Structures are given as C-alpha cells and as structure tokens.
Picture 1 (cartoon, protein in one colour):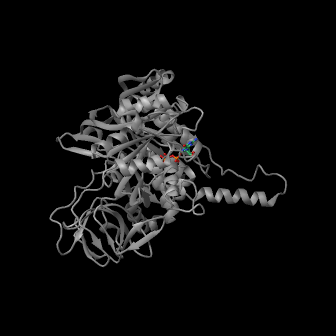
Picture 2 (cartoon, rainbow, N blue to C red; picture 1 turned 135 degrees about the vertical axis):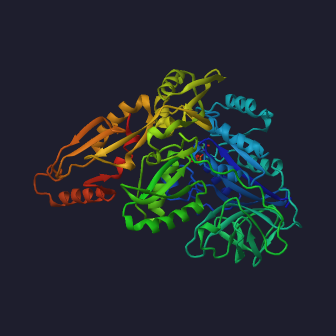
Picture 3 (cartoon, helix red, strand yellow; picture 1 turned 180 degrees about the vertical axis):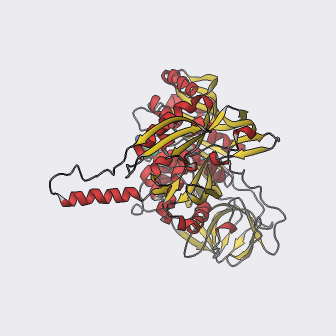
Length: 595
Ligand code: GTP
C-alpha cells in the first residue's frame, strides 16, 4: 500500500490533460511505441472526433523509482463544465491531482473550479505549467497566477511540454514524492467505492472501484450495499491498457470487477462493495447527488421502439452517472422520456451516443430548465417541461433558477461581455483584475438564458478568449409565460417553451420564422402560429407544393439525381407526423437557432 499512488489530472478544457496522460503511459512503458496513438484514453469515437474528453478513464502504470516499484493509478478527467460530475467522482478515488495550466492561456474558469473540487477533498495538488514549447508561452506570468491562486512555493511548480515530452520525469517523481500513499486498514472489512461502470454485452457489467479498506480476492462473495444484491467476484483485476486479471486487489488500489451482472439498475456509481460475510457496518460516503441543469424529452422516432429505448437509456446511464430520466408522454410524440442533463453539450453527447453505441434514432425536444410554480393553494410544483405548466389562472407565483456565473477574459472584451450578459437579463456583481490584462467578471443571471447559446456567443465575441463557469445560486420570482406553437391550428406540445414575458413577442416571431425555414413544403398550406394562452402573437405560412429536389439537375445525370433523392430520403429519417404535418427533428431544436 505504501507504494500505491492514486492521482487524477484536472485542468481547463484543452490545456493538455489527455496528451500528458499519453506521455505518462509512454514513459512508464504502460504502452509501447507501437500501441501508442494520440489521446489514447479518449477511446470513444465521439471523443476522438471532437477532441474532447467526455468520460473519466482509469489506467494503471508501474514506475520504478530509486529501485522501488510503484503502482500509479491515473484517472483522466474531462475539462468541460458539463462533465464536472465525472471530475468530482474521480477526485473521490484519489489522494493527489496534477493541475495542468496552459502556459499560453493561463488560469481559466475551470482551472479554478476543478481546483476547488480537489481542495475540498483534501487532495495534494501538483501544479504543472504545460505547453512551455509554445512561442506564446508566458511562463513567469502563469507561474505568478498559480502562486497567487494556491499559495504554493514557485519551485514546486513543474514546467512541462506534454507534446515534446519535456518535464515528464519531474512529474512522475513529484507524484511519487508528493502524493500521499493511500490510507486505509488492510485488515478491516472490505469497503470498495464504485466510481464508474461500463456495460459489456458479453460478460455483464464491469464495475470500476477503489478499495478504501480491506481487500478483495477472486471468487469472494460480495455485496453492493445500496442495492443489497450479492454476487461472486468471477474476475477481478487491474486496468492496464487492457484488463489484467489478478487474484487480489489490495487496500488502496483501483481495480475492476466482473460478475455477470446483467441488470443496469443493480449497479450504482457511488455504492460500496463489501463482503457477504464480515461485511462493513457502513457505506463509504458516496458522491453528491447529480443536479441536472437542463431538461428535454427524448423520444424514439418510431413509437414502437419505446421499450428498446428504455433499455438503451439504462445501459447508457451505467456509463454516464450524470444522466437522469423518467418516462413521460407527449400528445404530439407519444411515449418517451424526460431527461435531465448537466448542460447542452451533455445533451448533445447523450443523443449522439444513443445513436452510435445503441443504434437508436431519437428526437429530442426543446430544452428547458426547472421552474418552480406555486399554485393558488400554496403547493410548490417543479416544472421542467412546458406541457406541465398549469393554467395561468391557477398560478400564484412563478420562479426560475439563477446562477452565479464567473467569466475570465482579457480586458478588451469586458465591454462586449457585459453587454451580452445584460441582454440575457444578467446583472454584473463583481469585476476583479487578476493581472493587468485578465479580468474575472461575476454575474447574477437566469440559468435559462445561459444554457442555450450563451457559451457560443461568449466565445465568438471574445474570439475564444473567455472561459465560463457557473453554479446555481437559487430560485427567484420571474414574469414567465408559456409560449405555444400551433401547426394548422393544433398545438404541438413538444414545441412549447417557457419564456420571459418581455421576450415573448420577439421570441414567438423569430420562432415562427425559423420554423418556416425548417418545415418542408407539403401538399397543403401549413399555418405556423405562436400563441400565449388564446392570443396569437405571430404567424407564418409555409406554402403548399412539395419541393422537387431534382429540379435543379437539368440534364441527364441520373446518378446525381439518385444521390439527391437518397439524401432527401435520409433527411426524412428523423421526421415525425404531427396531425397532418410532417415535422423534422431540426424543428424541435429551432429555439436554439434563434438569434
Ligand atoms: P479535454 O480532455 O477536452 O478537456 O482536453 P485536454 O485537456 O485533454 O487537452 P488535449 O490533451 O486534448 O490537448 C489539447 C490540444 O493541445 C491538442 O491539440 C494537443 O496536441 C495540444 N497540446 C497538448 N499539450 C501540448 C504541449 O505541451 N505543447 C503544445 N504545443 N501543444 C500541446
């Protein structure tokens, strides 16, 4: 146990965590040159394509230092704010953290929030300034920022380039020398903290855990304390590049367990594993409950796929503990699920994973935050779907969530950012100069205004030089109304939205315009109306006649015509018949495209 080190890598997005993880794996010989490929731990296709880490990944390395063999368990974590739940779970399994800061960018919003998470769990922090090879590296300036932030001796900051392989040995030595060995009692009853799980269709669910006390042997009878279910540890082992079966996982170590568990519900991230006989009297304090920020409906394109979608959601949830959902029905879309996400990126990723990993084509509806409605009788009702909103005459009070948003940016973008936030009903609370050119702005702003396109707008007005982090600050009364959309007179519940009264007219008008662009022409005219209660506030018309996509292709190139028709067919896949009108998936997301 004294030669085990459990650590994670935390950083703002793109500061180089995954690249550094690659180098650590290479230097410790965990992967050979031949096996090496960039961002090795980001093994999901989606992660590779987008160049971001979505999931935490655990991997074990052996490292020889002063003739002693050390076991290093690395947990790579995502940097984007939407995946901070993954970060918090990794942190609970570690004693130390490498805090990576990009030498050309300096400290960003998630550097700070992830650092605080690590400090809350008393992790030993090893700051690493990465990308020192870049011509724009501001090593001294970033060092000062780090010293200011954590009050560390500047000599304790490691300088590195993950890309060029500079400073990697210093980092490995710092891990061995500065991260404390795990504490825990090897003789005590087994307590293993489940911090991740993966669905494997052949062998059942793989559970990833950290032994806090005791130890576990192959063949042991174990119990998951929260569910009370018992299993036999058919296979246990370490997570090297591949799974490496072992006979025992000692106190302090990280490992996996396979025992043919087929039912996704039986595995709960945060649960404690113990032995059936000599079981631990208490569970390890688990993780904080996930607090979803954005809610949306997910529906199968084909209504008969509902049960299959449920199974897929259960499997996905195993690997994504931050996803929450419950069944719901929509008059327009039939049976589906109301899901809670940590943010818009999370929602996009869930939809894509359902399609890629489970081959489920789904329709997602207009995202919404959770509002609180007090009715005339004084009951407080949480509402996260516009269709749940009661008759306005029965409502006494409507409240919406507000957040505390921290934005770090360069001085020249402060003006435009303040304008953007005010346009989003935000109020500036604080403005602090971190250095002569870096400013931290704090805003009080409604969550509903931030979840949609705020981040994209922020990035474009600051040319990428602004980072955002936020936390919920509470609920406050607000003038909100339900905006309905009618297609040929029929309200489409999946297109309704709850919006602020002052913005409702503008919103309704733009939404109708957008829908007009998105709805394909059909053999009859389609009236698109926006209404608040019985009052229609905007209208657009899609004229009749099917658009002939091949009309453009005069001349006789038949293969080109066929291609176009094929494309049109594909585009149709995600359509839903609502009343007499065919509505494409894009239409349900039209709200997001309004300027
Ligand atoms: P997320 O997982 O999405 O949060 O990103 P990350 O922190 O894992 O960053 P990643 O390792 O994907 O690196 C982001 C980009 O920075 C990639 O294009 C890397 O090639 C580049 N990069 C990483 N380390 C260095 C470095 O030391 N020097 C230079 N010049 N580029 C680097």
